[in-house]
Length: 216
Image 1 (cartoon, rainbow, N blue to C red):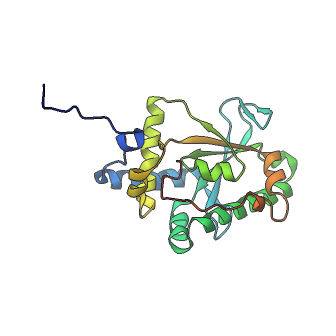
Image 2: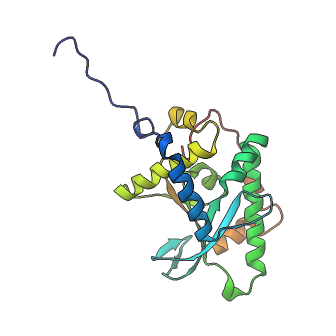
């Protein structure tokens, strides 16, 4: 009809699919706590922000030119959200970058000291922290757009809001769609990048120009 303007759609999926409503907070918080306990996530350092879960590959994966078969020992990497929140509040994201690299240096030293038969073949992360992972030398890959992946993205957006004081603002003003990614690193690549004094420090720390989703 004349005189009525059609509403335009949001500019991108970050605005269209925002954070879960607050009423689901207790349910998702209980699930997060249960999931962390069942995975037996071990912090890499007493004051670090990364934890590791020992697992097995479920499918064939090419990592750094090496084909890994199903059943290969895998290190699933996890952000320790409570520690990251405290660190970001106290010292900012630049220090979080440094702490993550110190965690990876510790992991490289632990793996190098293990008997070869006990070492992990590769390391994998799943989340929205694409910029962190790329700057720390991970092979970051987009995930297929599936119904389950949309649910996972929704959950990761809730984690951002739940653990970050300005999480909703980051979602509102993010410059790119917020999507989860897979991040991979082979055992050899871990040693090349982090298995020496100061390993990974040459990657540098660049300040973020404006607040935005960590995966943006």
